[in-house]
Length: 464
Image 1 (spheres, rainbow, N blue to C red):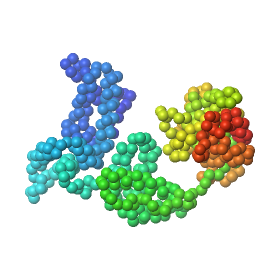
Image 2: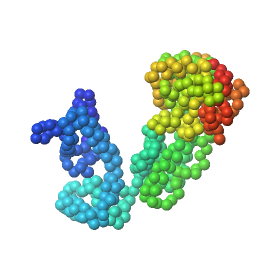
Image 3: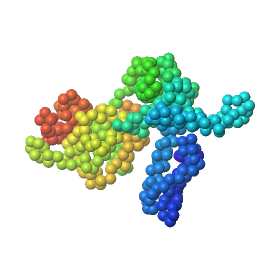
Image 4: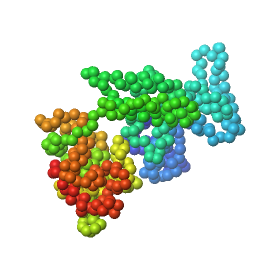
């Protein structure tokens, strides 16, 4: 049984907890050793004192142990050699030599028939046991056996493990996994050793993706998708190259994949089509991101990053007039960006404070007063909601396609600013375009453009 098979339920909150000791007053953690950890623990049962008589503390410590064990199992399972290599790498040559001799003697006693013609049906040493011996041999100067060289999947997981500042987001990991899976399908095997991947394999993989078609004969992978797959695979390949120190050209680089080829740009919405989507939204705070995007040009991740406390009265530096503003992706070290796809908003210029359009003020005040946040706070969930409502538009003015998405609203805002004769520098600050030498907020470092002047131009935007 694997550790992942062990689950806590509300009816069994005290699982793996046992009262022991002289007076039966100390809690112990006790469980049968999971299959994935048996070769490490080498005991049938794990028993550890939690050094507390408080049940709540015991439960917390139990959960910490289970979490550590799960991580250990996921790290070691299928990658036993590297696990043992890391485990013994800090030992001195002398200590390592005697550790190997001790383990070798134990294996000879346990498998005395190994290597003899009369072995018959008697078992060999396990894969885990041989991995431990092989890791010791390599650390003592031997060559690494080919069967332990990193596979693409192992390299991918190692890259995740070592990328901590900031760590890979769950969505990014899913994308990496998908790319590796597609390459494995193309290669016809699950464990592709990284050092065996040639440039011709990558070139043929590109052709394979370009020729994938759905039932209607439509191409499945756009050039942008192919480029993402190659970028993901390149990350895993580079990690393996650095770890195993082989010196060859990255097979996933420089294939001349144009991201724009076959990729359509976003088109501005017809205002009546967008109004239909708003009407179809049941919750008022599901409507709000659309209004924020319309009056600020914000991306979806930026709209959903707005918290009640980000809506407040700012002070104009010249007139000292109080102006309601909204902080979009404020500079707060404790908060992470919601959307990993929002690459252009990760620099300091995109954290901006924008005066609030007169028609957006009341909805934002209601949002601030509620102090509840958005009902669909994750970009992927909101995107799916928006797409479902888009399909329900009756008699659309434009033939709807992927070119009409939430991100299209940003095009509306830019166009509306242009039609209203608003200076490009001011429009850029509102929308969040990266403009060289120009801050994205208004006031001290904004070339004299204050909240009052900015609000005057923002109020030129048409009412949605």
